Length: 577
Image (cartoon, rainbow, N blue to C red; front, side, top):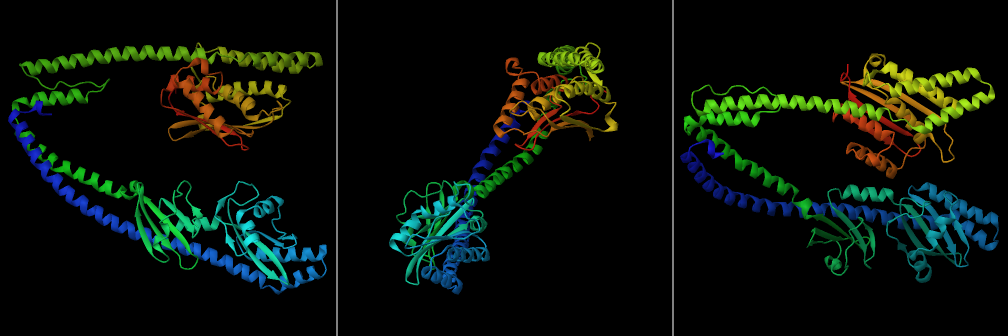
């Protein structure tokens, strides 16, 4: 930077820059230090308030479960039906108890299933949502077995369901009660998705949340955030906050007086200091402002004799290939000679660039035509087989139609010497010939619908790109595992601002995410010209269009299992018109 100006100006600027940098670093250290202390203080207050909200959410959840147990066993209808059962065990009395449990389940939102087992091993359950799989999961849970053996009540951790019959997130509450001289174990299965949403909402901004009971069992936790040791977490007692600094972040623990649980929330250092780093970069930006002003005053004071060279240097840096360079300095000294030399050099570079571009264009069109002439031999074989079958059937008019369509398809495929682009309406006419052949082959089980915007019917598109896309929809979109091909295909061509869009969609079974990724990888191989990894189809189309348009086009593959697939091409509307 200083080479374009006097040495004295450069020395003055360097001295200023050193002094200014030292002062700025001292002031920045004081500002960042004070900000860091204030940030830690505000963060601790924020964590404590969020943990208090999360603790309240859990307390309400657990207290509600206890109240529901009390409400259930205070029900005169349930007690009366149990008494009737023990006096006279019968299917009718058992169904009445099941119906009573079902009515109780439906009266409270969130209860997924109710299971009750007496000391004789008789099982009652809510009729709503009955499932042997759910019943097996509940009976085999550690909390259920512990309650049966030791009594008391037990609220299980919130778990993610491995069984498809269970809710996505669920929790079990188990209790034992004595009714009519019999001990019964009752188990509530709760859909805990609402609880999880409430906890996430209350803890928004925390990187992890964990809830533990007094035995060190984790009742709820963000995946991957479980602590390695429970020792020391209960030092806070109940109703008090205890702050802990770990290797990854700042954690705070709160003990609930109501349900004797401990809630721990954590904010990582990376999250904590995000705003701190923003302040740092803001100060860093301010650092360059005085330097900019200094440059505005110091540079004009430099020797004016060097100004022409500075201007010439700026023009050389701003010159781009194809631009016409102006004559910067008309003088009789070396600067004038340098300016003229640069001008002549730029003209020669532009001429060579145009020649190279023309050769590359010709090469691209030649390669495009080569790719266009690729024909799937199975298509010809299958068409000839159709003609053979029609001949045996004596369907001479159909033979003429199929043969005419085949001739048209082959002529359009091989006739690339005269033009690389063709009008949309002409390509659609040729495409319908291919469709006619496919209708004969698959007995018109595929319905092809055309929606062509009239404004683009005379616009030109790359020749022979529609038929491979339609063929792809037949064999990869609609083909079933049994080899049968049937369904619907929709072809849309319409303008979108300055672009022309081609969409070909099918109603097939669609692709999985893995298969969709594989297809997109193949397109990447096509872009990288790895011929051996591409085949006639989407990769062929992608490579052909990329040779014509460079990066001024897009090809998007969209698919979802069970909902079909779509291929969307977008390129400049008036590129070849």
